Image (tube, rainbow, N blue to C red; front, side, top):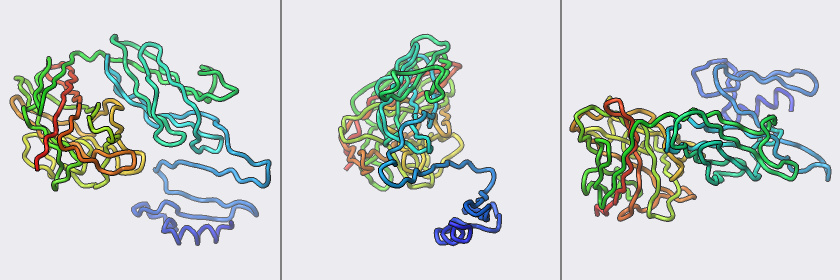
Length: 346
């Protein structure tokens, strides 16, 4: 297509700017002819773009593109001893498009159980760190008839250099309806678990935490490890805004407002797009904004929305949810695990 055809199509889809104004949401600023068989497209600067190309062929000589290389979509960010951290890899063809195949991941000291397929060509794994700190290596490769496994000299394979850090401390808590408490000062308030979210939806879970120690503590990470609702696969919300029902996990310190975050509140936002879901059991994720609890202070935790693979909300009333909360207090790092019974509030 020549430049005028490109411009017309881009204008029809509201993607063509033509003014160079960086304040609007249109990213194509100019299209000009660059020869008899080429056009030059100018994009807005300072933005990250993902390029994908199609293989166009005629007749029987054209075939499906084969895997060409691996790339990291989500890295291993916060590895601590005896803890978990999820990562995502993509297999792509030579046109930079995701393509499904078999993938293998392994670690030199830690372990990497079998991954899950988020979509063709995209695979999520959970790295389980060893009990001792220090360096570790995670190798990922795709498998086909011509490849036996990971090759450190192959640019097509992927390698993560991981520096495992000492956790400094850990704890666990459990109970029926919300009892808890391990070696750390954070505890689960007895009977606080409920299967609901803001505006009465039963596809959320809420419960209360308490800082029973004498020092301030900072909540830094969260993991939804498991649930007795077998149809639940993920947490995802696309509402935008702030507060309960606007984040996958929201920590309302002092329980003073569901929808007006204060400076001491914290939350985890997975993202509102397709593929941004938090997969249950995929490991700890750092909070988008940390929460701070003073000594003796409590917080209400809202988790939303529990969904099946199709993205439909699931009724969490009378179900159990296992949640791990990471935090720091008095110079020590903790990971408290709680079993919450989300009683039916209706």
